[in-house]
Image (cartoon, rainbow, N blue to C red; front, side, top):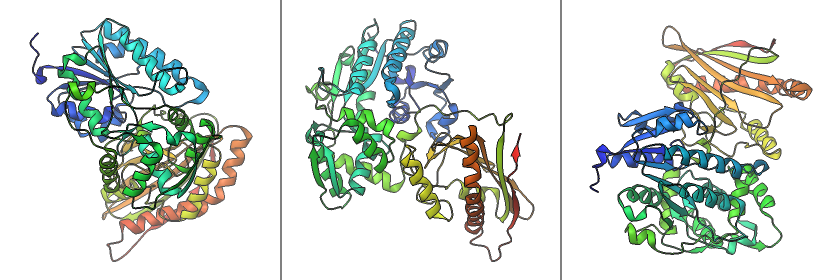
Length: 503
């Protein structure tokens, strides 16, 4: 059968806002394909230049919605399934992945789609396979069970700026010159650079021999996790790490430690830690035989990822994936409000540029020790703390994580809303609204809202209220100072706070 030119072919990317999917769409467009995306929160796509391409069709909807999947599969030839759960809470991720994969395959069978492409995980098959890798294999089997041919890629650790496994590795090596580790550090693995993963995903479309096959993909090097850590230390220009493998550290204890030291939460670190006990090495060379091309070795892959990280040029990041909570309904019940205003010399554009740099290495314009203490307190009870930082020091978009916040509203030069993801006895958000005044002045209205849950929530609000009085004025004055730093005069008037509860 004669293949159509790429410009006449349409593909569906399920998981387009995720770490791999967000990068894959751009590569598909560069090859000339048209792309359909099923997106739960279309606002997440604002950070991607490719989302404005006329060849991209965005279908709003949930993966659980068969009707939405059907719309996204309209006139599609290839469907990429790049979805899997990482959170291990209550062990429900395997059941959810199984259900989603089944409904996806059934929708594909009712469409024009001729092929499914899935990215799973490497790992020796058998009874000792971790629950996470076993779930990935189960999804592959479900997708391959139908009449539509499926190409299943199996990869080990993906090395790329912003990936969960890469950031876990980097932070462990950076922060721990001496490590007591589980014995899995002596397990062999074959990491692969994200650029090579994307190449295989794109090239398989035109290689018919890949259809209906399971293909292992890996980089040029095979080594133990301990050696990978030493390569990371060398690329970070650090001394060799001192590593003591011990047999008594369980995946649960390891995940708690990873959650404490790295930006990755323990709920996500748990399946990662469990999977590290399994040898993840390619069983054959089918990938290189069917799709020839040189893959990066571990040293080059880490170096490329670090270059992207240090330059702030991180295309996608693990923390952006997942469901974003909707705006809380602040009507009804008791909601505490702490509202403060300041007028600064500067345009709304200049002011918003400063505000959107909040968090990460920039911090919160002062009182850094109080924010660090709050971050440590949150980490101690299982929250993200300040570890997640931010993807880029200045660029910010809907759905991205900023320390222990999540961006839930962003209107350019007008409004930024951050919802707290720290462990709290209630729901909290921090909201910045801008109003441009006369004479190139801008009013900032900063509002903290908190809806308590029970008596503990009430106690929490009144406990942190004095800290608001210390921190919030510093934040506003710091914003004003930075916006006005190039002006000869500063005329900032702060309006007293209002902290009365609203009922």
